[in-house]
Structures are given as C-alpha cells and as structure tokens.
Image (tube, rainbow, N blue to C red; front, side, top):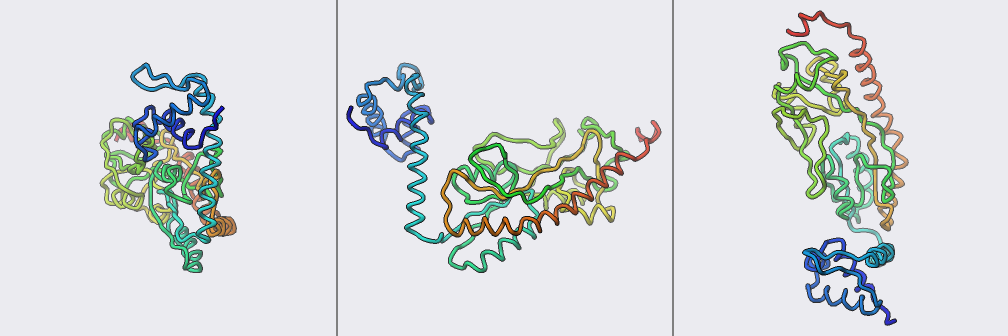
Length: 328
C-alpha cells in the first residue's frame, strides 16, 4: 500500500464535514481539482470506496465514516502540534484575545484584567464583548483564547474556573404596569407590554432565547446596561443581572417581578478556555492568576445572591390580594 499523506486525510475529512468538494476547497483555501484529486488518490491507495458520488450531495460510505472517525483524532493532534510549534517559535504571546460575556460584572473583571496586563507590557490584551451564545462561538471558532461567560460544563473540549453565580431577575419601573405586581403575574398578562431583550451576537450558531414572552412586542439592545436604562425610563420591562440593579431595587426606582411564572434564573459565571488547544506561557499565567482571584469575585457576587434570595422570600410570603385588587 502506497503511504497516504496528512493532506489527503485533511481533504477527505473536509469533504465529509462540508458536504461537498467545492465547500471543502473553500474551507481549506485550495482549488476544487486539488481536493478532488487528493480524495481520489486516497481511495486508490487504500483500495476502498470512501465516498458515494451518485446523489446530489457527496455522502460517505460506511468505510468512509469509519476512516474519518479515526482520522479526526490524528488531524486534531497535527493541529495541536502546529499551534504548539508556532508558540515555541514566538515565545511569549504578543496578544491574548479575551471575550467578556453579557453576564459579567464589568468593573470587577476589567479591574482583574487590568492588574494582570499592566505587568506584561509585551503582551497586548485584545478585548471583545459578546452576548448570549456569542462568547462560546468565538471560543470554538478559535477567535478567543479565554472567555468570561457561562458554558456547557459537560463539553469535554472545555476547562473552566468558577467565578460565582449571577442572579437574573425580571424588573419593571413603577407605574409601567396598570395593575399591581404580584407573584401570580402570567406571561399572557405581560404580552401587551414591551419586553426588552439582549441581541445574540453569534453569527452562525443556532439562536437561543431566554425569558422571551412569545407574541409580546420586543425591543432589542446590545447589553444589559442599555436594557437597564430603558427599563428605568419606563420604556419596557425585562430580566437584568441582580448585581447591576441593587441600588435601584433598594430605593424603589425598579420593582422586582419574581413569582411563579417569572422565577428568574441563576447562571454560573466562569472563565473558560479550550482544553484541546495548547496554551502559551502568558495564557497559562493569566489562567493561574484568575484561579487565585476567583474567590474574591465570588464573594462580591455572593452578596447579590443573598439579596436575591431575600427578595424571592419576600415575594413568596407576600399575602394574596383580593380578587378585585388583582384585576385592577
């Protein structure tokens, strides 16, 4: 058997993943004939039919699927070696790409990053903001070295550091609703009122919706700070991280709508990076630094968590109003 090359395997894998030769050629930045020739060569060398070309779309045969599964681990190792060799050549990274998600308490996290990067002038911080599924998409697209957001902790490609929990609660300005706020307010009753939501910044991931009342008029904003401003001015209602509105809840400029139908949610905020990618020396130093500082950030977020529990308990214990009052 004539030895086949990694290039042949790359082209074969890309054709299956992308569903065709032209799409694979685009992803690999190669010509269509070059990709076609590489796959044909691989089939000749192995003496196997790897692709079914008879239909509208190219499909892998059973042998092709089996070979691809084995080839993917080899290709991942090759990519890891390539990245690692590049990092060895460059030494310390000249840039680290960090993405802050919409659930982050920005003053605390920006302060944490500032302390770290002011002592490492040779490495520039490239900082971006993304919302909803945007941070994870950037990480898996290899456009971020580290994200500060929520993640799927069951994903084996990730490692994370717990930074604390963030309570997200539904709030409204006094006078926005023409009826009293009770724990029994239903989504159907809120459908007539404008709901403010955050825009998902992901470009190609499936859309995710959180707390959205179907059928309600919506206004979308880029971040929670803008959402807070709209709600304060009586232009909409919506869910906002508790740490962002503590003062307004205390002095009555915002009212909490926690109840049976709008229970709010507690999200786990983490620092996350790819486990399946080699990390440079500065990236590892930043990771270790975040680990040492995580407890102080958790203590800040725990204050708002405790406050949220007190508000939830107050709402739960609130005596029921008379029927005439609920309809008012």
